[in-house]
Length: 50
Image (cartoon, rainbow, N blue to C red; front, side, top):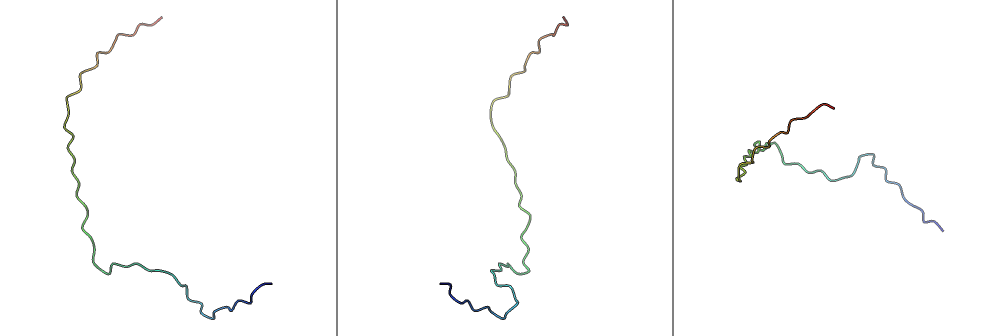
């Protein structure tokens, strides 16, 4: 048997609202340095047409 469900008369949506107020966060600043050996130059081989 199915149980009778009572419908609520409220038409307002129910949910979770997360707000930080009117405080704005500063834009993040990011800098990165990669330390490592200098890559060796690649010698290109001459291509020949057949």
